[in-house]
Length: 301
Image 1 (cartoon, helix red, strand yellow):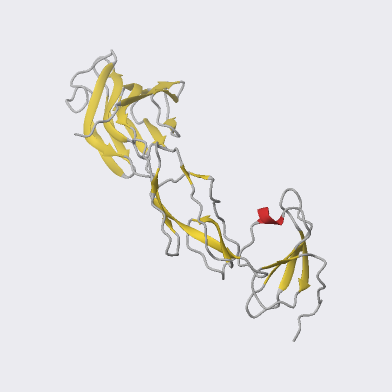
Image 2 (cartoon, one colour):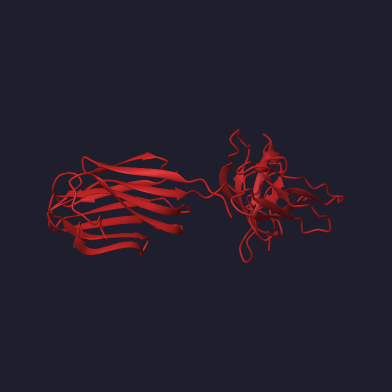
């Protein structure tokens, strides 16, 4: 049998607001609305609505409403739902009906409903609506007994796109992250650049990568893809860290158009480079070169 820790969140009606206390789900919020009357009191024709948002991932085990009626009157209906799906309904009936408390009471009493374990999906709110058809119904608080999703550790796999393989790495603890491995290439023309969420090729612009030796924090089991740069005058990708503070030109070729210089050094401490536009007599690809190389202002025919 799977074990879970039971948590209790309490929402107390005060000043026509729901005041949360106890084990409130992390990141959740509540909104209380009432049409008329004193806080928590429903006279005939009036209603209230409690909306709990940000509860996705919890498993609901029971709900307890703390309520009372008048001495010899008080009737209405109630609906509780997760998203659009009702999970608990009381059709219009007097408070003395078994569907409510089974007797009229001016003292606060508990009206409870248990569940076998209702999971709250992503994006769904928990709503409670009570409408009175006869004076009066009173609501003091709403209590949720629930279990929260247990923290998970995730496994990161690595696709090197070469014959060399790297074993998957699993977090030692939830949200602990992993240390990204390095790849040593026995190739004078290429070097390992970093890890990307998706496979890339040299036709793409400089990809966003996580560098070897840095911490990576996965949100699910996933695969990272190795990215390489060509060690030549024309590189598919050029990391800004390698520019240091020297003067550089960076240009990009787009098929069917001129090769345009779009930035010129020096590279500043914050990694920025002054943007300019010139045509370069290069064939294709990303290029990087010192600024003392002579440039032609017209693309050669």
